[in-house]
Length: 82
Image (tube, rainbow, N blue to C red):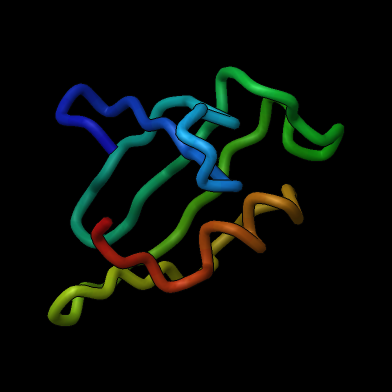
């Protein structure tokens, strides 16, 4: 995630972005919308809403509302710095 609200994700760790988009943060809630990359049908033109917590070097997202199953699967994994 970048300061301008954009993000890029390299799901298979090959050095190339697989999906990208925009996010907004309000308090401990993030709203995510992909704007590029191959998107499953249930993800196109939808947003996901997640609460997040940070602990040491782990960022954890908890589903609030999202119809995109692929995004839920990937976002709700624990995130660690590279």
